[in-house]
Length: 198
Image (tube, rainbow, N blue to C red; front, side, top):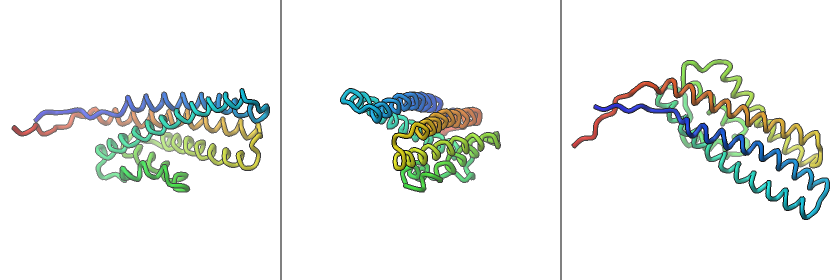
């Protein structure tokens, strides 16, 4: 018998957090460029807003992939740490993000289930952190939709939308950190692994 140590997805966590921060900063520049083009349309402002928007879309795609890979890995670790816990299936953990309306509710529950299964140290403040992140994320989506439909040039709605997006970015970074830290502490246990048969 040999032993191997399971590990929390620290590198994935750092990569996701970095991508989230870069996307959040880029979104501020994108919003300013789009607002400038809305108020003063010109070829130059169109090119500028198009370029920043393209960079933002690429960063958000990368961020989404890194976050979902981190989430899938955290789900697997949570299942290993608490085999009897109510942890969402691998397909549901990822798929729920892409189903309209369901994606406004289900992913929050998946993150909470993964957090609870990660460690007995999961506390009310951790649930509050997840709830604040989710409220800011869904709030951002709803205000953005309302702004685009009702008042596309509204500076007040633009500021609220950006504030919610930045809050969601900071809070999801903290959620990633908390789940990863709890899993790292719980996974320091060395588990026996069967040696390969000759």
